[in-house]
Image (cartoon, rainbow, N blue to C red; front, side):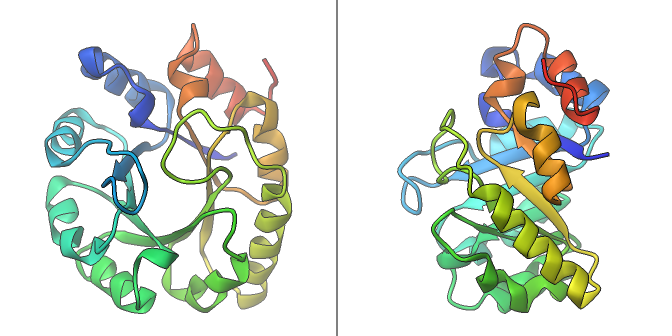
Length: 217
């Protein structure tokens, strides 16, 4: 069964504790989208919000850094209570260095790529990462339409992970909903990030349940 990681960027920030409680009760991870307004056009939130979520979170925090110079903040995210930390392949000069820094700070490292970066770029780092984040939209904006070529990209990456005999999970982020959760899982996805599909729904818990059980609602 896939893990569901609701994106807190789509949560109700006026009633954040309520949405944190919903994730604790129904999902597997908290997905935290960190944007700096430079690597991506938008700005999201920083450490005060991450730390506030961490104080109430009963599930692991999964932070996705859409920022330049992510290595500068690795220690602070570890101190804030983040368990999984991903950075973008094209945001750093030496991915291996950042991977090692993340692991040295007690977190699970991951690399994220946008739809225009070949998944083959990830192959050299599969054995040293705990997960890879495949963006199914372009990073930086919520509510984008899912890009259909994502399925083949997941399959290609999964085949290489299996070929290497690695224990590296595949996370997918962007336009994920109950309508495509089953197909993503079949392609090889292990973690599904969903923002609008969860938090804009009348019953977020039902959406999470549907994605876990491969039901279309």
